[in-house]
Image 1 (cartoon, helix red, strand yellow):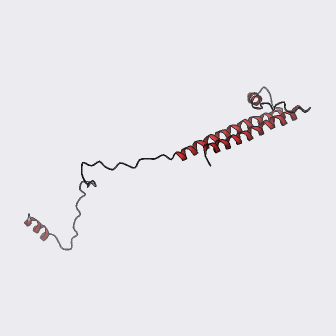
Image 2 (cartoon, helix red, strand yellow):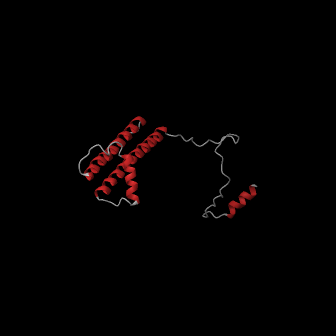
Image 3 (cartoon, one colour):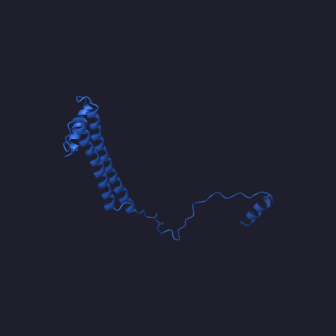
Length: 147
């Protein structure tokens, strides 16, 4: 073997770069091959963040529902004042829903003009839904601990 090493050294030019060895098998970083590899860090769940997101989502849904209720009531006011065709499907659907959503406000005030009556009573009902949904969303956020 010593002769072989000497012959390799003699055959090589002094100015020739040496060739790098090809990469060998991966070197184990474990001290003992029987040891278990370190497991990946366990994922932890930030439950505060989850709670804040759920509370925020729930409060947002409440706000959107209140907004949709108010929108239906405002559409009913627009359809009545604009004398929309009562036989139209959209107008009848909005009218049916607005009857339910107006709660006790639909006959709160009884002016002589029927259009003014719809404007005032259903307008108050729309404002009611906006205010109530805002308050309920705020309570949800406060009870839920969300900012």
